[in-house]
Length: 173
Image 1 (cartoon, rainbow, N blue to C red):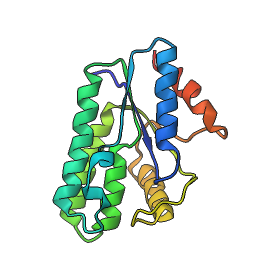
Image 2: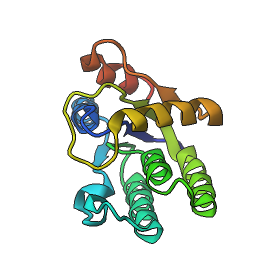
Image 3: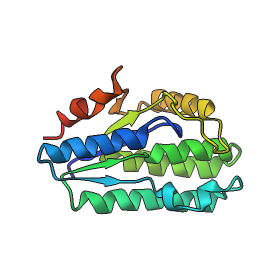
């Protein structure tokens, strides 16, 4: 299967959705049949809970994967504003002692990420978030995870984030 998913990753308030929508728009203007897949957590009541169970966490992650796979059957390029690795990092922060859960979630996420053409890591935080997870801790954990696991195709945005769309779109065709 051809890799055609570009996924944005990063803490809340880092501009993932804005950049993902900008890229989707750019691709469409350049006649690339593309679709936007929003984070499954947007429509989930689960992630607002500070007591998110492991099962609820897995359900939201699986929904994200399902939405990405279904969209990839209909479009030449998919852009999503949350990668599956975001769900892993939130699991790591919320359930640090659940070794079996984290091992399973990590394996699932790494396997699914093989569908990703690029993972754009947005580490700068623009907006303070009301979510219960420390966003700086999240960003540090994600950066370390990408480094330690040697995840391929991780892209750090150029200095001007307006250039993200044009630099990523060059590789689509």
